[in-house]
Image 1 (cartoon, rainbow, N blue to C red):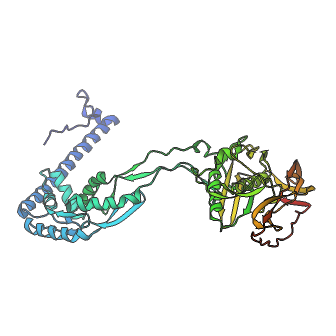
Image 2 (cartoon, rainbow, N blue to C red):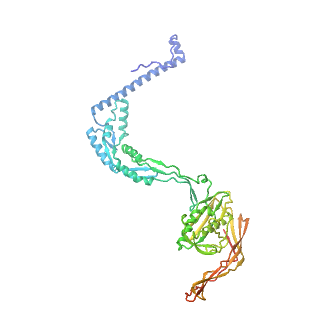
Image 3 (cartoon, one colour):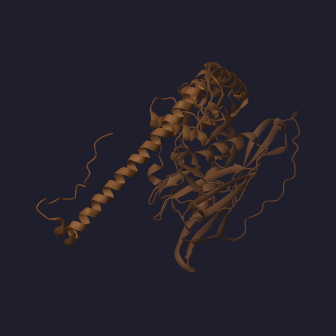
Length: 502
């Protein structure tokens, strides 16, 4: 044993002093007590060392007597194997490995989870490593390490897993099948206008199937119940609304407007949907103008439009993009009741069946445009839908500053003219109506904005709807056909006054 000093480092002995002097000096008495305490500690330490050495020698003798058997308390895959020799241990390990092939296992990739098994991943048990590990417990050659491991084994703290090797094929097939459930595109800031929400940008993800094979191999070797696969984030998507995400609020409808349509007219309905889709989600920052022609663009076949009935020069004709004026009138009505400034708007050349006079707004690309402007100190968003016989437009924002009243008053009714055109297909002396005449009107449109019950602003416009000429076809052929003139309901003038509050 190493040599130990018989005095504490703090004890000082003065040989010039006599025993009597030491006995009378309290410091000396303290030094004597310290020396006795230190000597006692030496004796106790030596006794403990001897006891521990004796215990280790006993364990070493026991190990030598046991030969190649497993230390007591060791477990293999949860099964006690203490005391087994190498042969018996190998049989148990092989059985445990085969039994565990159907052990449930979970593959995890982000939020995706797939339940599988060790067998389904193409694994084979490898018992040799487990057998070697069990037999090595308590036989490292380091007395203290061996003693510690044997104590842990006796407490049931050493439980060795059965390792596995696997071929790539079955595991890779499962990973590739799982990949589509993990694959997510990176999305920019989005507007969910139906639920009145602004959705933040999100990062996409992709499962790296081949890189995940290593994670599967390690997980099988360690006997875990869950294997986390390798998932990589995708680059962020281009995000035009990123800078506006914190300022956009679409929780309140500032103004809305609906117009009906005949869903049986497939081509016209198609044009309504194409035009509305171009407008839906348009963001107007404070002071921004909305130009219908700029946002919707040319009404062409390349843009997806079809021929359908529309108004041209006061007549109903088939035109490319027919019906687009209903889209412009509907968004105009929403902007009117939403308090947007009317920068430019022109009524139709004849009253429309789907909207009250004074709330329509015709457009012709590129010459006749409809423009609105955002007068508020916050951004607004335009929302349009075409569904179930109704075109609907909304102006959305964080709050509604005004209640808005629309008033229309007729000031003059304008008679229509009649013109005749010769038609040699009709019998002489007969007539047929080629276009029904319609009276025109002059009216005054007023918009009143109320804030807190008080009038905040009043605007007035003088509008004119020209009369529609009646066109009659007059027969010039003595042997021509006789036209069938169906009786049509009489013309009805609009109400002299109309008021709508929203």
